[in-house]
Image 1: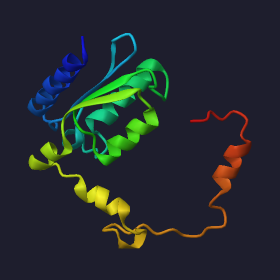
Image 2: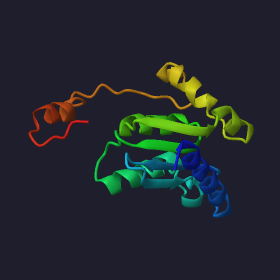
Image 3: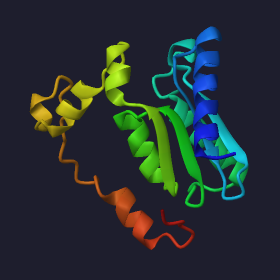
Amino acid sequence: MNHSDFLQKTIELANESIVNGGGPFAAIVVDQNGNIIGIGQNSVTKNSDPTAHAEVEAIRQACRNSNSFQLDNCILYTSCEPCPMCLGAIYWARPAKVYYAAAKTDAASAGFDDAFIYEEIQKPHSSRCIPFISLPLETKNAPFEKWSYYESKISY
């Protein structure tokens, strides 16, 4: 299979997702040998889970199947340009590349507009539509201090 074939598979999976009660998005993760190790379809409303986006689901499955929290030798294919949450998950998973079909503007035309999230990120915490409030607890850095001395830690 080539990149277009893998991307076409995500379109087919996105169409299947709609029929099965999910959203119109799908993603797959392919390892360096060309094997699909993760498949994800949007199931946000189906599973009442706002994090159940296709890319996140594909990454979760690929990580379980590869027994690793990083996918640095893999390629992620997705039916649509990732939203901010998925973009964050992708960067944490560290795939080698990401290929996508539809643009975020195409998704916005279909009612999936993430522009407000990008706008919210740029605002000061107190000006966001959901205010973010930091409380200065004396123990706020205790977990980080413990982590810095923890001998069995796995850095990521």
